[in-house]
Length: 289
Image (cartoon, rainbow, N blue to C red; front, side, top):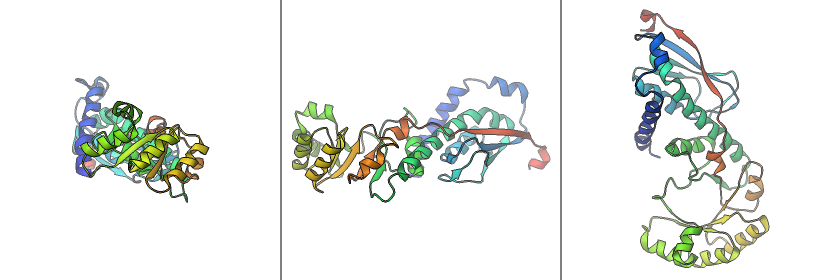
């Protein structure tokens, strides 16, 4: 996504998360910090992985106070190790305390997705097959989760329902068949839209090829059927393998020669990367200037 467009979407999501966490007052922070006081706190890795979302992490604090600074010693996409100091956050102690959980939630979630994506993408090295994500994202967090996939070494499938045609089983049922669904999509959608069709059988694959689909998704097929389907398509459309893909079986699918492998697990099953803000230190006002 364009950085400016991402900032607009991201700011709304971050503000929503901050409002969820602070309805009218951070009672704990107000109890111990009644007025502004400069401070700094360390961002520490508590597990090995790939860091992603440092800009979102920093933006969370900036939306509370634009004067907050995040001095990072790593960049998105870097491998980090347990115990490593990743950044120092400097600013009003009240902002550091109130923004901590929301900022970490975004960073941990994005870094977890990037870490899992990196593991999956590594299994495809040397195959020519591209790993892509799906729309199985957390509601309201898609912009962050898809960005994390890209940082981890994957690629983004369509961003939402408006960016491409994908005819799934229920669309095909509604249209009355594969060929009819493709014809209706060509008639309605812009010529700039690709048309992808989800196929569950060789008969559906044959019909999709003959109707001129751009991409054919081979959905939940066993390996023998998928191999036959790829031979049937014979380069006349791009191929995408999908369905219950994880780190344990992704290489076997790639070895069949598909162009893309999509995995919802990248975003719906990746564990967070454990990170922490520790060692908050109050600073002398003059020294902080």
